[in-house]
Length: 178
Image (cartoon, rainbow, N blue to C red; front, side, top):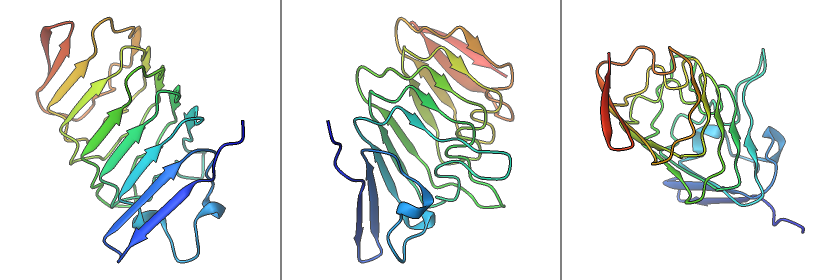
């Protein structure tokens, strides 16, 4: 099966979206585009992982400080360390993460969504087994819901480091993380 190319949409510099249906590297961006131009990412079918950071490089969207919305396909199994982490003193605009029904995501690596201060709620798919250190550090999370039948088996003790009181909902039970 040949996947269609990644689609870039830009309208009057006000709405910029990126639909990923295959691999995306920094050389794929059209002329005049930067990660800061991206406001919405739709990670489509065929994508199995979202690249994290290397020792000297940022994650796939680490410079996308204006990104507000992410839709993640059910085919994605791993979100790499620092994939959506904003650094360099910038603040992330990310406020919405949606995982498609039937998600096969198993791993949210450390610092994946660090510094996402506008993200206040998230629902973790039941397929997730591992959440790494500082995965949501400096996020704005106040409510985390784990889908029923959660498979979580490894959650680093500092996965939600630096947050004030948050409510965690798992199988209709409420826990408070301080």
